[in-house]
Length: 88
Image (cartoon, rainbow, N blue to C red; front, side, top):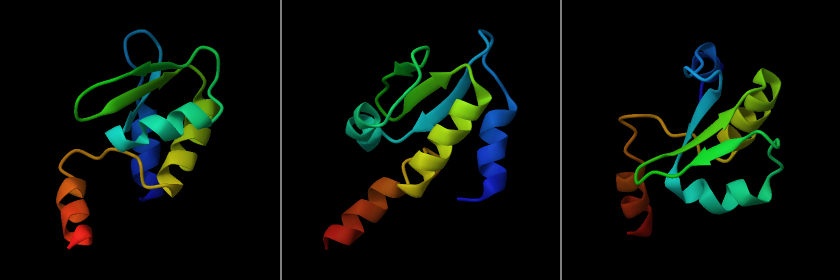
């Protein structure tokens, strides 16, 4: 994923001052294994999990880690179709 997209995710904060990182649902187990800051919040959803962090440096570290694993959610990304074709 382009560094530009990662920077775009960190460009804005939510109204409460958190950086919001959208993550694919299959990353739920992986999130429990990586060290997250104490103030980090995880919001579960059906199509996406949101990781909220106050620190920009921590958000960048989490983004890079999840990006290496291909777990960042991008709207319009057809990863479910790709998974079906991989099984065939």
